Image (cartoon, rainbow, N blue to C red; front, side, top):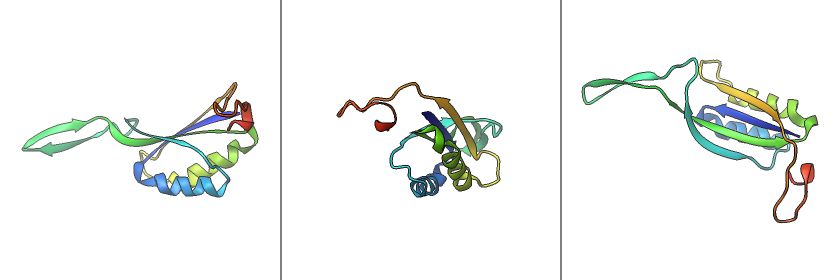
Length: 112
């Protein structure tokens, strides 16, 4: 199993969710996060004073999938989250050793 973490622009969440549903993903965890990469934030003026906003709002999606479906899921995220502009986000893929569904005690892929 693999854990896919995608950091995307908040307004792309609905598009990504729809794309993931189309490839059979029925569950995910979504967290509102803040961060920066090459964008390095931006400056704004508030009450006459200029200040830098270092951390930009993003959304982190976490999904655990079977090894066979990783490429399809990553392609769906890239297709629906891409704007072609800086700050589109990143996708991280890592191995998951074990998963357990608390209610039924199912393990591994049956628990996902």
